[in-house]
Length: 72
Image 1: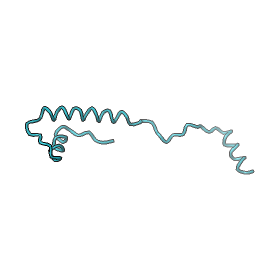
Image 2: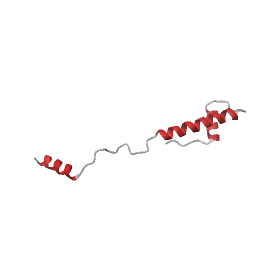
Image 3: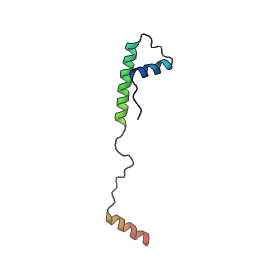
């Protein structure tokens, strides 16, 4: 999961990418608010359960049958 940037870091990144932010704080603030919404939505899309879980459960009778089949 990515770290969410603070406003000043977001603005600095825009300046480093060549975007002129001088006297455009209102527009930058709106873009930052959209960035926060997008990050929140992206975090909600990540599954929270373990994706490597198996759905089949093994009980003792399955193990006995498996062991018998191996020995034969």
